Image (cartoon, rainbow, N blue to C red):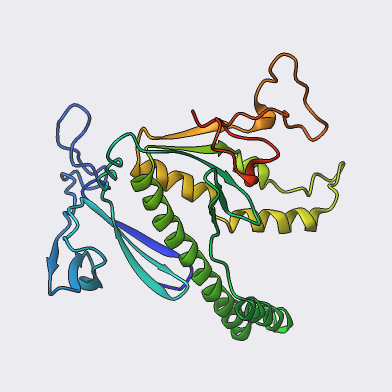
Length: 288
């Protein structure tokens, strides 16, 4: 496999053996019955195990959990020179805290990744100044290299490995933060954001070209580097039924006798008394 983000999926769920009516499924070319490949995993010791990959044989991998995965499908990927194996397992939800628990509101931003209504501020880890300088160095060298040369590919691969390090830190932070939220609070409320529309390109069309395209591209990268969507998704997986999306203050109806300022946000305090936070000055999410 070349280092181009190759992946392969193996398992019984990938190839159904039966049709919808329960009869055996036959191969259209050979006429033989389709047989799925079952997942076979053996534990070698406390840290290592092996899985049987069709066409490759037994492949060792390092365990990240205490128990062997009871999965019907697994995926082998090669990205940025690193091999990974992932088993399709639905984890058990995190138990709710004892007692009534607390209700927390989360406002997501770029400068502060997650501002909690109790005053805490959580930031997603980014690349260091030295690492960002290394990325720019490899990108400059790749730009000066000859087209389709080995040096250009090597420099881009070095920059991709550093960026993959940032992605790993972001995923690790989202996993730990979502687990903390699911274990600590009875109800978690996120500000409802359409991230896809927020990170849409501003290039426009040939007839109507966009303005400040490069500035908007930088803002899009900054938003995507915060992991907003992954944090919301993983929290919902770990605390099903205890995560809600609250419309942004600018999208909520203005109560009678109030007005909406030019900023597009209603000047209404929707927080209950005692749960106000400096991070919610422009518009506050309802927590009760």
